[in-house]
Image (tube, rainbow, N blue to C red):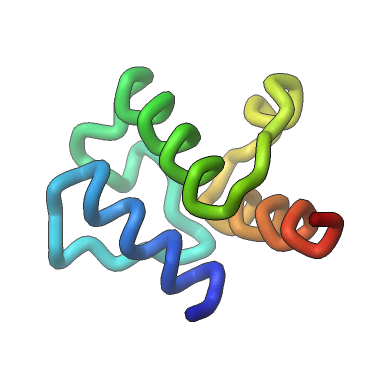
Length: 79
């Protein structure tokens, strides 16, 4: 399963929407219910799923889902 596929599953679980389609250009504004609490739950789920830890200063640099996906792929290559 690709990083994108795994992110798709995480987003659907966090936002309780089995029809949610995640794309690289998606932002928080594109997803109903993506507030600060949902963001924390999302990051926690991503870290758990991929067995990574995203540095706090790096979190602020994510503006799209694609930014997050690319960082996950970078961290996954290191581990």
